[in-house]
Length: 103
Image 1 (tube, rainbow, N blue to C red):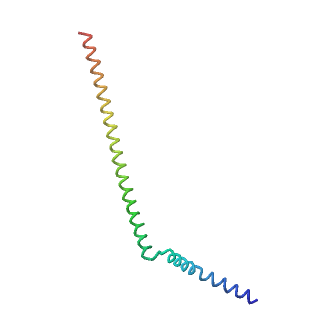
Image 2: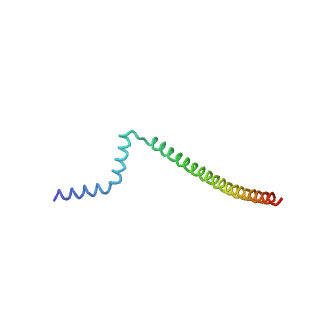
Image 3: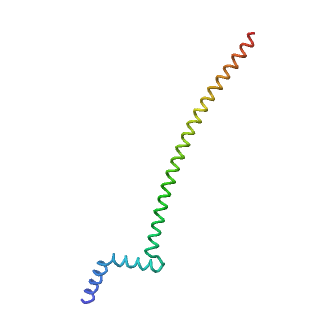
């Protein structure tokens, strides 16, 4: 009976403080690998800086995409104008040939 009672107390004690033990074990692991609060804060700062850089790069990419889109539109307009002028030139050539044949 004493063994059962001590087992129940041990279970209660473990379940009650399992989160505290997990925190303690994590802190021990950090100490074991030489990770301090300062280095964790530094790493958080680095992560935040990298996240800001990613956002900045995403913004730059969007701006470049917008520029590319604008250039594509201008190219399409230029091609249309160029094709229209080519057609006009071909029409003038045909008229010139026709006039040469007539005279």
